Image: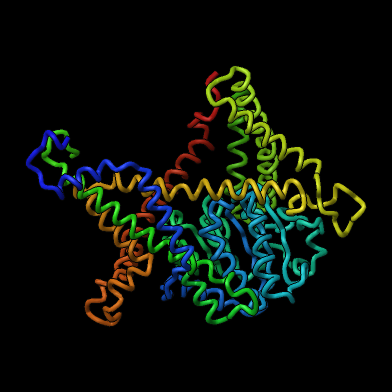
Length: 301
Length: 233
């Protein structure tokens, strides 16, 4: 190409050549952009935004010791983005003395909840007793029909907990007849079935029965913005939302043990910062190369 | 007549019941029955799905089609998880019934099923998702080009959001006071503006459009006007 265009300057020639860069160099630069900040522990202070503050306030608005239903609607693919939110939600609720029931609309959500209970709830709040302060209900297939069923008859969807105990015999659940007996619903969601279905089948039907807060992935957040703040009092979007919410929770309720487990969102902001700058750099470079090649014989248009 | 009439009748009945159950407390229990039917049908379709997975992959292996080795791995993994799950290999005894083997929990890390989840499935799915970062970077470099006005608007929006979702927003425009007349040049303010006034408005329109479309399609199904879900013969 360069032999056919002898009158172009060295910078333009370089830009044109960079347009044909092997994609493996891009992969390598992305790997370094993520790995170096992770290894060096690069992190930044977070200033909580409007949505994160609203989410914090929504959970604060529920009286201490209230009943909370957690729905873990994600799997390991979204763990990197959503687990920091789940950690912060559970710690916040435990610090407020809420009673928690854990369920999942995703097959692997049960394992996500199990990990959160072990690493956050029991590690930081050892006073929590199974059956009295928290209960694990596990995964229930059926997507939105499970939510719909919970609003009319809770036991029809969850007759037993994961240990095989009838929920009527569990002190925490003995007076729960329907979903409306909970004060707060928290869903950490990666897609269908998740936050959107909780709005459509639970919150829309009983708008005053409970407060609904959600944590979602960045790609799903756009679908949820229309529901905030009327049908969804709190919404955390992507790692940024998790980091901001973590900042608020850690400041109000410093974790008594393992504080590093409540810094996962903020730790991820360092790699995200460098990776986003790299993305912008690549887009600018790609466009510069396109403009440099314009008008050249065989150049890209 | 029966082949098409009965499915349409079932669909119309269940649809009408669910709509009625939403509005009338009297029919709420009927709606619960219909939801239970859904659970039963969903369980049966899971069996059909597993059978279909076996058929498709076994056919691929027997005919030695390209990529048949992947099918063999799929079937081996499927069979292993099935055996680990059904036989509860290494299950932790249930404290309430410690002597009953099949009362044990097979999903803990100590069991074979839980071990496979923890050390095989979980890292694999996380890895697959993490690979997106590399493909997105490569795609952005090659395809995100300012070729027309629409692409330029998209580019500017992408830059605002990419910068605003990191500390770069604070570094670049954090010095502009939040109560000043130039507050709008702050990247976080621009990002909030894009989300609240553009993305939300657009998404709201799409959501309402989808809802109306779903309503119209459901009515067509329930009234037997649209029969496209039935076999032609």
